[in-house]
Image 1 (spheres, helix red, strand yellow):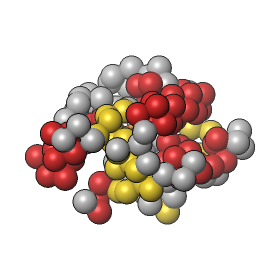
Image 2 (image 1 turned 60 degrees about the vertical axis):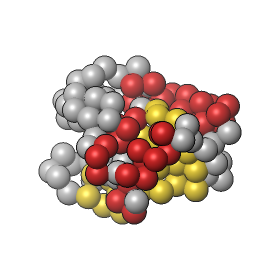
Image 3 (image 1 turned 135 degrees about the vertical axis):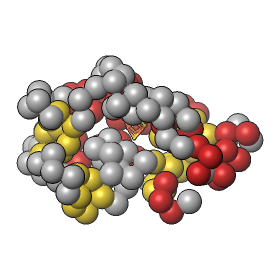
Image 4 (image 1 turned 30 degrees about the vertical axis):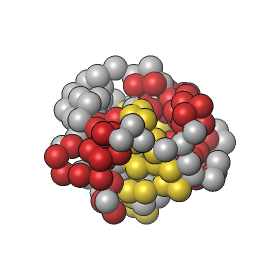
Length: 150
Ligand code: SF4
């Protein structure tokens, strides 16, 4: 079973209210059709609305966010760290309940990014790193796959 970023499944939960382009992901369509994909949006699970201001990790990496040593802030400077931590924990719980051992997540999101995230300056620059959910899933032994590797 796979936990999958909900936006990649065609659900309009992205910060700007858009959905991912599910037609680009035949593997995800296949998993959904077989009942092997569990869509989750950790940002929405954490209580954030759709649409919402974009947010980025600042002051450290996702693992630091989980340990209270770095923050997630939105473009207006509001601290949304707790939303990201709670959303990731809820998504992990759902994944474990469903028997998932793998994840397919959307690259560059502060929650779902697998190899890269934006650098915290809101200047469209990426740095190596991962989102808060990706870090939590990896810490619990999940195989985490970037949508860009499908
Ligand atoms: S948090 Fe993840 S699932 Fe939700 S919109 Fe962002 S990339 Fe998609």
